[in-house]
Length: 340
Ligand code: KG4
Ligand code: ZN
Image (cartoon, rainbow, N blue to C red; front, side, top):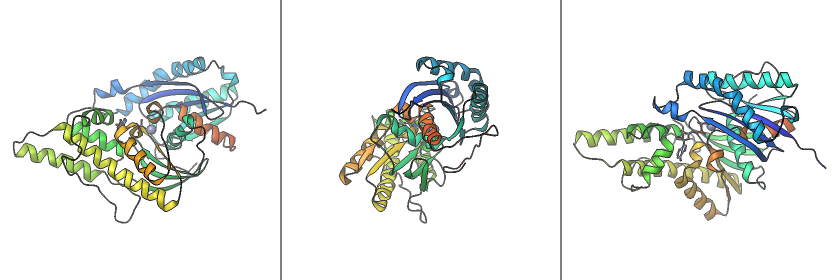
């Protein structure tokens, strides 16, 4: 009989202070998230200084709660996993310092985890049958990556955004039409009342990167459209803008993702990151996969946006592969996927 391996995971790369206990890499025993969204909404986006300060205030409580909900004592934990990049340096540092202190004090191994690897691994939580190789589209507020997951912990980045991330485009367009922060869920809600084909926003291609993305032109097209209407004294429909913008993002993501799937001959496709909770996009990808006979995977919304359970899953596979971080572990704000 194999022994249970329990990971305590900590995530503080942006505006969520989160901790989780994960058993054997697939079973989430607790998933505590203290969101700062309401606080940052006042400023229209994440204020890094405020984020770090709030992480410091909340992290101990969040960890205690995660252990309590998992009915687990720190002594029963096998390793402590923590996000050490990419993200906001001050925010990351809070989690890294906390994880080091806990691991040192309790004599537990420490495993530094890449935030994007965590997002990808979120798919393992509710899909016990999912194993590499598969293709994964990671769409978050800071990243848009098309990743070939070759094996556990082995990633080949096929494409990435050349400018704005998909979530960033949602946030910027939401601000332009006065919906506020965070833009993704607000655009999605507004789009329900609008016509997705009312405004022909561009579907950008990157000439020398067939799998790369560019969203800044789309964002400018939305701003130009709004300015044009205002100059002509015309009333514009926020709902049509939201729906047409969302459709343009969705079309580009589906096209690139399906090309990657077909050209690499994989039969499994997954999505990850905050934008992956968008239902219009999810339905479009699901449909495209179905047409091609490809299995489609997605995490529940709670595991799409930032959480520590996904870090616990990624941390488990790194731990089992023998990865250990030392006391020099530091926050790396621009950490690349696949680097240590
Ligand atoms: O993965 P995440 O929580 O944080 C990062 O690692 O960046 O992603 C946050 C991003 C934000 O840009 C937010 O607007 C976007 O995900 N997002 C959405 C939705 N929910 C969150 N975008 C589109 N539709 C949604 N329903
Ligand atoms: Zn994230």
